[in-house]
Image (cartoon, rainbow over all chains, first blue to last red; front, side, top):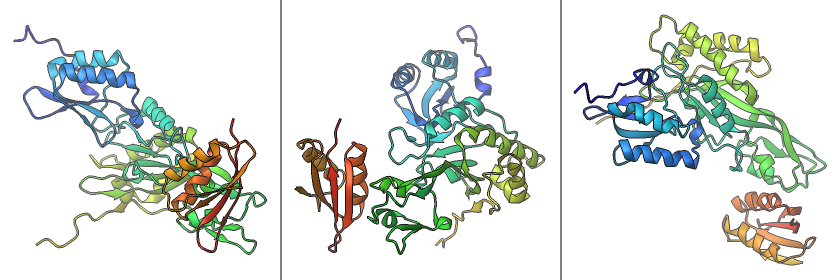
Length: 315
Length: 75
């Protein structure tokens, strides 16, 4: 038997991405697809490899991966090599920084306020697979406050944001922005032009998008950052730690949070970031972040919010 | 001035209809487009503007719908 078994490079296994599934010798192979964008040539190669070594189908995972099903462990090296020829890598699992999730971004999606695809690639390139020492660490990028990727259910969630500013001489008093403003941060003033109530604004940019004369423009653009979210058996929703974080500071910001997490989770075992924040209090993380990102860190915040999913009356 | 009544026409059909009418005009010609409140008035003006046309005015009538004035501008 050992004569017919190809030598397996076990270093492929260490990084994760090969997940034991049901069935003797069979594994699921999770592919690395940051932001869910897949070039067509690469997709064709994945289809070829899946057809050659896998089962009848692939699975599109919740976090935008393609997973090859029914891969015999004896074919790991061939699968990795053949995917690698097309530049396709295998993802990771375990207590590491995972492949970031992102919406389509702003290049073709008219709602997108920031280039989430670029951010996801950047984080994937620089931080993917970094061991946390404690638990998994998920990052997601939403291009606007519609937040299709549900950013606040990640350890760090980034949400594109715009702070609007009005040029009153360009405004034709059509009232569209005021009417479109979901959080009611705009009211028609005595001069028939909108008045901006900044504390109600969620920075969605709808006023800019809807304005027929471009009287609204952006004063600031960046990411709203929520930290400490997770889902699973004990869901937490991450809370606000920073606003208008520039896109080019995303990687360094994650590194700072990760360093705090590693330090504060010491002796706490396998624990997610949100639960560490609840245990340590928000002040500790806010103070750490403020040393490097004082222009963007909020004055105060609340801990990640526990979502009671088991309430209700059972008969 | 030509009037396009797109009341009762939903997105994105209203935008495509407006686009087709504008295609038959000369640059600089102005049309009035009637749009329903809600999604149509939020979407059609900005989509026409993104195509390069010039938005001249937008006012709500007492009946609730909007009158959009657009100057054709292509290429």
